[in-house]
Image 1 (spheres, rainbow, N blue to C red):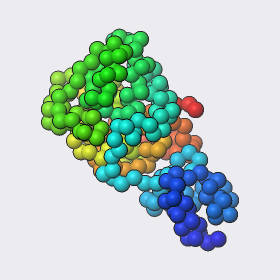
Image 2: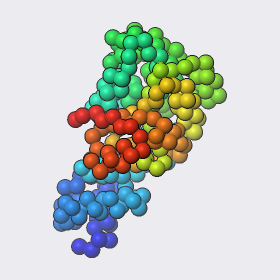
Image 3: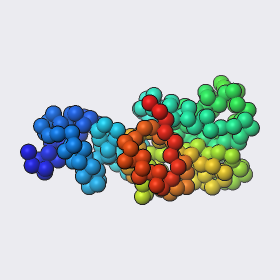
Length: 250
């Protein structure tokens, strides 16, 4: 089968399934594993898909944003593992910023035994923080109905009153050259402001966010430590050239 024909078959399969494994592509194209790996790399470089461990997934639209309910059920086990790694970085007495992301939400149960103070712009985080007895400050701002995030001028202004030991952020995409991105410029500004007021900043993102690019830039890759899942060795090398990477083991 010609290369262009394989590309068509792979993209048709991806459109149908949204996420594919290398084995899936091998079956429909009758090509070898090494050929499919090369094809997926080429298609990713053309901006047609995103490579993930063992396969590929579709590109998201730059302005697309899922609701909290949709996000919270996606890749849940991966998010929990990443959240555990992040929580292990927190020390007794730390002042933290947790953004409104669903991965930072998973950190909260692991902070229960630590005497910390949390500032958050996530309304969905408040109940979990209360249930775990964690001292909490909520930013002001306008509530985004879809995600429960507080954004806008008031949210940004309130963050200026705090100084954080550590800032934990989610992102819709992380890219070697284009950094961390999110669909909403207002939410990007809240994240960036919190990072600018922290001694250390961490971005929590599972591998489905790898190489994805949303509309609004949050930070350059090197401005935060990336906490993610296990990635192929060549991918890890690409990212560690630009920033520190902490990996949640499988």
